[in-house]
Image (cartoon, rainbow, N blue to C red; front, side, top):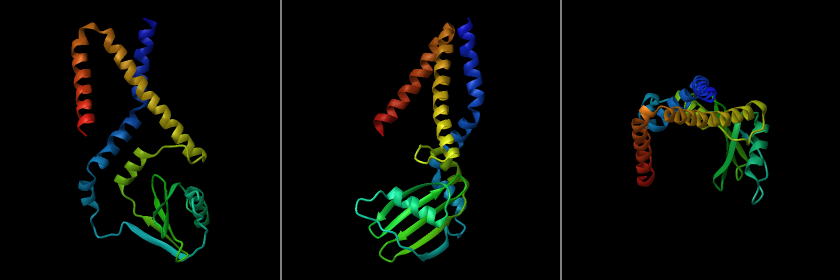
Length: 198
């Protein structure tokens, strides 16, 4: 009985503590699924990106260089704050994308022209939500960003414990087993159908 009580309490308090995360991941899934519909609200003629500045700039990009290391240097030289990624959309450009939950900027370096252009993206609530949904990873070691990644891992473990405790409590109630098997089986079958079909 003590273990059953522990499981019930675990399930209850996990559900309460995970409410903000269920809301974040649930609500932020809407823009992922309905991005074309949401885009209509932002078709007001305003540009998505606004030029902050453009200036001469020179940094060497050796063959096979670590783009993240070069991106970190550009980010520091420009004074941008946030998590970032660096990639080459084409041989004549290196883009450093820097973002927080609230802001996003591109530092675009053109090595042939020795030119650096920094642009800021206008704020949109759908991008704010999808940014929260997708935020994670341990590449950035700054304390608050690192802490967010740790908490996301703990939340994932919390989800698994919440599921396990729910299944355990269901199994203890013999009168609900048939309906429970029906719910579990239909959910698994639907998931398998999409997994194979898509």
